[in-house]
Amino acid sequence: MSARIPTKTPKGHTMSLLTMRRAVIACFALAVLASSGLAQTEPPAKMKERFQAADKNHDGFLDREEYNQLVVEAFYFRDKNKDGYLTVDELTGVVSPEVFKAIDRKGDGKLTLDEWTNALFVDFDRADTNHDGQLSYEELETYVRTSGR
Image (cartoon, rainbow, N blue to C red; front, top):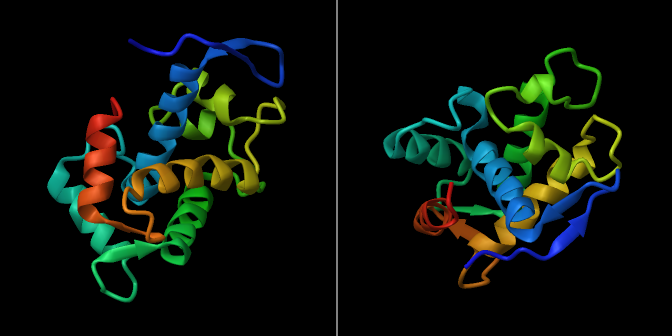
């Protein structure tokens, strides 16, 4: 059964914890797949390829720094007009307006790099099931698969 505890967003909209969780999960998967523009439909083989490309030291894991680099790259890749913010239009087809509102902590219709990064690191910590500060591909794949993504 899903959580239905209402949560107030910055603009006063009520959103369930499940909806907020799905919002963060969508962005988490997006960070790993961001450069392709196919985050919602990309096959597992492509996800593995992107994971390996993000693993800069080729140790088979994404540590927090590698993941941070990936998150920042995803942000700037999506910032089409280069204004330093992501708008719902820049994320069309990637995240729903509901997801966007959930991570738009200021409620101003634009995501800062901090809002983006903070939302994605919540899921990094959840996916890191052995709490070693790094993600294996298996942890990432399991998390994305089991989180309704």
